[in-house]
Image (cartoon, rainbow, N blue to C red; front, side):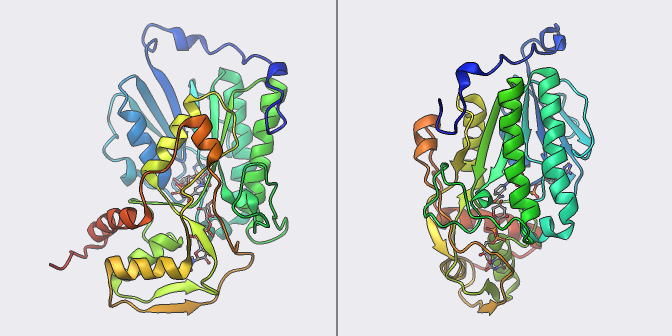
Length: 343
Ligand SMILES: NC(=O)c1ccc[n+]([C@@H]2O[C@H](COP(=O)([O-])OP(=O)(O)OC[C@H]3O[C@@H](n4cnc5c(N)ncnc54)[C@H](O)[C@@H]3O)[C@@H](O)[C@H]2O)c1
Ligand SMILES: O=c1ccn([C@@H]2O[C@H](COP(=O)(O)OP(=O)(O)O[C@H]3OC[C@@H](O)[C@H](O)[C@H]3O)[C@@H](O)[C@H]2O)c(=O)[nH]1
């Protein structure tokens, strides 16, 4: 019996893969579907997967928060395909692996149309599990540290069940992801689907939407525009920030490994939002002001992953410290905002 209560010995074997898997044209290739691949993490994942010449990558995205721009270097590549598709509708294609990322991730965007967010998490995940079942693909869900809600245990291990408000304004996302995890395990136990669940902690890096609303992108854009950094009250709330290349490495290791998860993937370095603002100020624009603003309901007060499981099971740990990652993101934001660096 594994720590998450799954008795892997009694799981049914996965159904036979599609016969196309063995056709002469695709024999040596792994066909990988990335839902939400036009988004921030998804597009970095696609870059990494495309480095392997054995991989064919298919992205489906409805462009709600993602953009074709993030994938422009691959459009037209013979091993790459981009499909405009909403995961709340069924999808019939032949693939070997599914990285299921499609879902708005910034609180501003997931609260914009909460009913759609929960449909994306529930119906979207059901559709992707149905696809995985039909073609015998392995499926990885990008769940979130938000399943721990406003955590009463700190730092968070995977065995913590969380403290989530089921009727709050964040619940379309955090409860949505919790149901998505449930669906993954039910398909695994009932149908023998090969599943992987990553619980991703706050991730940052180049290509985040400039007006995404998440804290790191907000602060960097504000610092470059010389606008006050908007620290939401009380400013003592904490987050742990993982650079996107570390995240992608963790996700691929999880997909390729033997463990179903859930596994926390995140950087345990923990910062208050005031500390983050001070770092951005120091590294990017020492002149910028910090302004304290109202917060939103149910904002988690603290968040920090225990990554012992990721270290032991995946041999993974993050390499990029926040102080090294922020300047890498600054470069990308300067280019996009057209703000050159002063000498
Ligand atoms: N970035 C983080 O800090 C973080 C933390 C925890 C979990 N995650 C998870 O990782 C995944 C990717 O997050 P991200 O930061 O890259 O966000 P993102 O918003 O940049 O990317 C999400 C992508 O999904 C697409 N999408 C949304 N709804 C869709 C739908 N119904 N059908 C098809 N495509 C749809 C969007 O257009 C976008 O391209 C999400 O599942 C998110 O919940 C991210
Ligand atoms: O301008 C801002 C924006 C945000 N914040 C604060 O920064 C903290 C982090 O907020 P973000 O909006 O970046 O992200 P959150 O941690 O709330 O949610 C994120 O968690 C993990 C993922 O699943 C998602 O990417 C997202 O939901 C919060 O405490 C928020 O109050 C600011 O102080 N100023």
